[in-house]
Amino acid sequence: MPPPLALTAVLALWTVIDAGGNIAGAFLNGAGVIRAQLLIAVTMALCSFCGKWWLVGKLGAWGSVLATILAYCLISVPGLILLLRRVFKQPAPSHLQTHGVSS
Image (cartoon, rainbow, N blue to C red; front, side, top):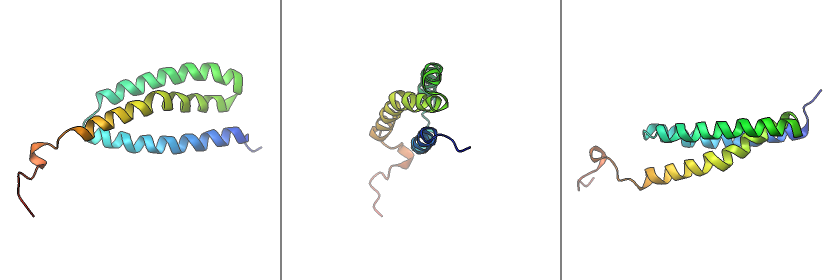
């Protein structure tokens, strides 16, 4: 029996959203921004859990994935954008600056 179209659609959407978040997360890990990511992830997970509890009863299995998407888009995405902006506004570490040396 094939899965319902709604379940397939929200799983496909989540896969695309998650891929973008993984890219941002990997970059922030490399930049050493760990604690802030952890706080955002824990907050998102708690909200996602509460949403799943409510939406699975209303919508069925695809409500679980929809709750994850909503929590991620409302909590993690704005948090990641804020963190990425902060990282890109920082000057490069001194060992990476050219100090006027031309190539």
